[in-house]
Image 1 (cartoon, helix red, strand yellow):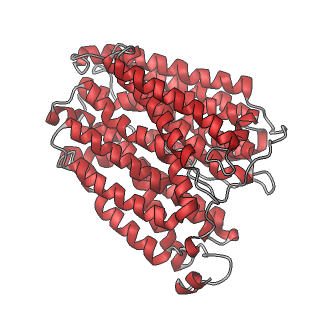
Image 2 (cartoon, one colour; image 1 turned 90 degrees about the vertical axis):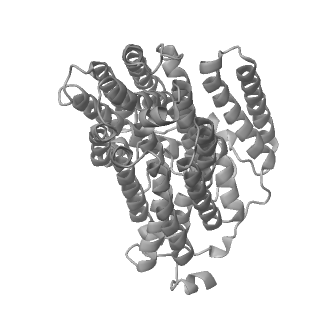
Length: 505
């Protein structure tokens, strides 16, 4: 209560329309928004990075995957540390870490240094992302919490929507290095707002005992498997480094299951995976986000290296997709509440598959309005119908007591899927070797990759039809209580929060 009074607050929490409420939103939106923004601006700059640093296609894969790999590997740990040591403390630490890593990325003289500093960026993102939503949940008055989360999600989504345009403009007008340096002033504002407006709330209610074994095993397991798949695509699946990383990852994940089954306060609540709806939704998440991540990695390169667009033009070309999602995601969420998630999670991926199939028509001979525009709009429409119902299904299947760990697990699944797809989809499509970035070679591989991605996301729709139930009627397994939500369920594309009828979520 002392910290509330110091911030000029009393009662059950911050009010949405107060100065303190706006300050809390400023801090959390800037912090988490920069994480999602960085996931989109870099893709647009990849061709220019390759040209300046002499990077081959494998180096570009690692530029994206180093960030996704460390973020996925340490997200669960970030959430646990926030529960133990305080979410404001972890948030500010993560934001500062992210800013320092961003400066190192912008100053990177070689691709090896860039990849290493991108990995550091991902670690900072893993620390601040879970704490961002947890701060809102813990800080705002119960009556204003849904409005605050809606603003956090919607404005964070707007930053994501601006990402391709901002990345393209900065790359074309100045240099690709500015997409990293631009993070610094925003992180300074986020840290100031966190210390000024976010009450520490005593940084209390720690876990009885931090699950160190679970944290280490989850990081080694996830990191090892994703690293093996990415390294194997370049060095060969039977190369010693891929085999060693993959074996270490599998063993660590096996040990994680054993440890978490006996731990009094586990990092991962394994009983959630006995809930059919929860497990099925995460499988669909992996399939859909693998297609999404692989496609959005390759499309900017196709637009610049093959079609001949500038970085600014290629970034602008992707904006309609995110605008469609921002406009329709909320309605799709309400639809899922009314009719159940099975129909939208079946139809949405099938529509997205059509959009990906249309991308095979993106060639130098076609115009933007007749090739790229309809493809990204249809793809965005499919994702709009899919993502919010998918998020709702994961959280509803887990129940309020497990909302935090459920959202963290789902977020890890989405990020791991993206990393796996970036590492393996190009190889499956024939985009590999020293000539991978040659326009003719890349164009042929891009067409195959889009067909593969279309088939993959369509499979997500089929899986939804076969495994997702329209109403969550199954009985949930009991498990340990989870104090706070650990993270926003999904990173990209943005999820717009919707209001569900009372008692249904």
